[in-house]
Length: 110
Image (cartoon, rainbow, N blue to C red; front, side, top):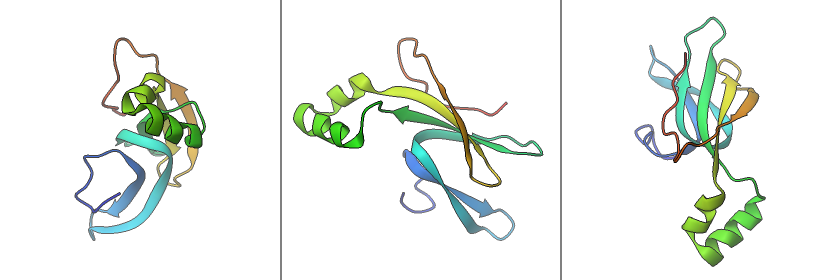
C-alpha cells in the first residue's frame, strides 16, 4: 500500500526492485497482512513474512470490529510466519507462532 516510501506500515504486497535501475519489476501478493519481512541470500532465496492471522472469516472480522472494536479483534489475533519463494512469489508454507506474553515484531532470515 502507499508509495515506495511507505514501507513502515503493514502491507499485503512486497514490491520487487532492480537495484541497478531502481525500477519496480513486480509485486508479490501476500496471503495475509505482513508486519515484517526479510529475504535470505541463498541460491534459492526465500521471502519470510511475519503476519497477523485472524482465524475467522473476514465478514465476521468486520462485524466484530464494528460491534466491539479493535480490542475484541486483537483478542483473537494470532501470529504466524509465512515463507514464499522469493524468485517466483509462490507461497510455500505457514508456521504458527506461540506467543509468550506478547507479539513478535520482527523476522530475520537465517
